[in-house]
Image 1 (cartoon, rainbow, N blue to C red):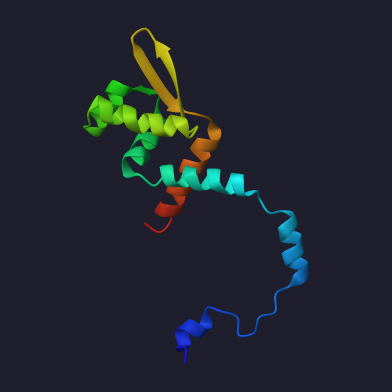
Image 2: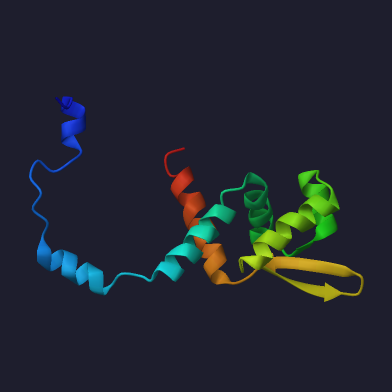
Amino acid sequence: MLSQEKMCDVCEAFDPNKEVVALLKEKKISDDVVYELSETFKVLGDPTRIKILHALNEKELCVCDLSELLDMSSSAISHQLRVLRNNKLVKYRKEGRSVYYSLDDEHVMCLFGQGLSHILEDK
């Protein structure tokens, strides 16, 4: 027999709303898009990358700046930036011998900002 708690989180009778289901099936996103979105959220699941994005949300920075700010080696920062770049979350530009990173576009700022606002909402 199911406990009272377990019974509360499922329908007592299987009776899906066929109209709603059909409408939502028409709006369903492709498996490729689902996979890409999932990969983006996996990339955002790393604390070091979150710190990098937070810093880049404030200002364009070079690898040396990020290394000093986060007290990490330049190679460790470069590795994390490569992951972020491969997932279109940051972009870079070269100026002389320096490479400067910034967030790729406003979508990244919105995604990061929305997530941060959600977490800080109850604090």
